[in-house]
Image 1 (cartoon, rainbow, N blue to C red):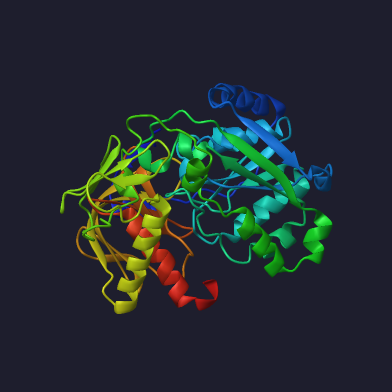
Image 2: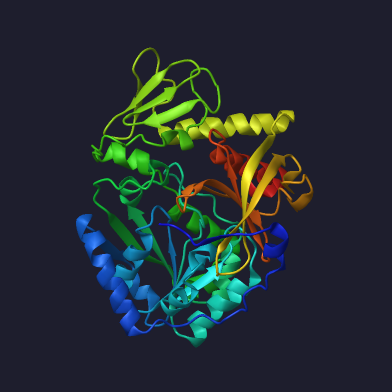
Length: 421
C-alpha cells in the first residue's frame, strides 16, 4: 500500500491551509455490506472464527469497541464481527490522504497518532450519542512491533466515563503471526481468531473508579503473540519468516553491537561478530554455534529496552541522524520537503531543516509512546513527531533503528513522569 506524495518546500507546505473539521458520518448499509464483502476473502483464507462472552451486558445501544492492534487485517475482523451494525472507526490522519471522502463515507474519524486531540473525544461523543453508531478504537494506537502490547495511555478510564456507553473488547490471536509489521508486508499462513467480550456495562463504568477501569484494560491488553505461538505449537513454515527481524532486534545479544544485525530467510545474523541465530517454525531463536543468549524475541527486546534505559540514566543516549523529511498538513498528499536532521536525547526531539535551522521541538512528556513504523507506505522506516497542526515524518538512513527511538521515547516519558511506571 502506498500514499500519495508531492514534492515541495517546507515553507510552502507549512503555509497550506489546514482541513476544516467535519463531524463523523454514520456509514450507510451499502458501505457496510461492501466492507463485509471485501473482508470475506481475506478472512476465509485465515479460517477466521470468534467467540462472544458476556455480551448481554452491552444492551442494544451503541458501544465503544476497543481492539488490540496487530496487523492490517484488524479492521476487516471488526467489520465482520459486528456486521451489520454501523462502525465509526478512529483512524490516523495519514490513512485519509488522497481518499478523505471515501474514508469518511465508511465511518472513519481521523486523529493524529500519539498526539493529544480533544476534538477526537467530541467526535466520538457525536458518533455514539447523535449518530447512534458504535465506535471502534485501537487504544494502543500503534501496531505491536514485537508481538507484545504497546503501552496504553494512562487514565483511559476518564474517557470511558466521559463517553458513558458499554465497552466491548476484541482480542485477536494469529493476526500478528499472519502479517507482523517487521516482515516486509509478506503474509504468512496462520489461523486467526478473536475473543469478543463486553468488559463493562454502562452501570459498571459508573460504579468503578478510573483506576479500576485502567487496571481491567491493562489486563485485557496484555499479551505475547510469540509466547502463544510456542505454547500452542502454531507453525509458521514460510522460508522468509525472519526477513526484517533486525528491525526489532537491532542490538546483538552476543557482542552488543547496534546496527549490524540482518534478518534474512530464517536467520538473524550479526555482521560485527558473525553470530547467527535461526528462527524456528514456532518463533524461537537458536544460535547455530555457541550459547543462545535470548531465544524469545520479546525477551530480547526487553533486554534492549533495559540497555536504552541505562544509556538514558547515564546520560549517554543520543540519536543524531540525517533524515528525509516529509510533512502532513492536509488530506491531499504527504509533502516531501527535502533533507533534515533529527536529534533525540534527554530533552526530547529536535528537528532541523536542511539549512540547519531548528523547525520543531517535542518534550519527552508530549506522548507516552512514539509513532515509529517499519517500511511505512513502502517509503521506509519512519519516526513521526508533531502536533495537531502538522506531523513531521522522518525517514532515517539504513541501519538506524526506529525501534530504539521508540523504546527511548517510552523510557524518557516514564523517567520524566514517575507515576507512569
